[in-house]
Length: 172
Image 1: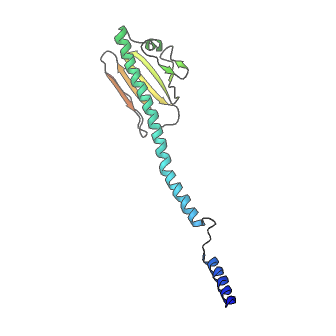
Image 2 (image 1 turned 90 degrees about the vertical axis):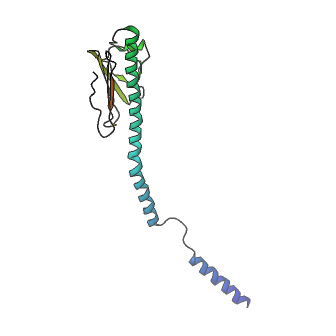
């Protein structure tokens, strides 16, 4: 009887060994499905990420352009004259660029400290200033255009939304 019990136990071990699944790794089908899911999610997430990054950069330039309009108005209120260069505006509030405080004529391009946008100012032409912010780093259709009419106080701002670019603005 002892011999028969040993044979049964040996046979049971052999059967249990053959019925257990191989747990050494994933099957090819499982790997293909997992990679497919990751690729699909990437196609959805990556464009959304870049779009949000461009929106945040646009928010920075809009804030800077709006501040610049306010600084120009403050200078006129304070001195009674139209500012003609960066030095005039720095007497009201420091305008910081990559290289430090902006100086010189308005023909000098203002590169924001983040280096994502360049801002140009033209004016005063008939008491109107035109301000343009242009993206430097591949955010298409995200430019900003603004104007300020110092004699009427009118100001406008147009921004690109990623699909269409900013339109020219006229302050009267």
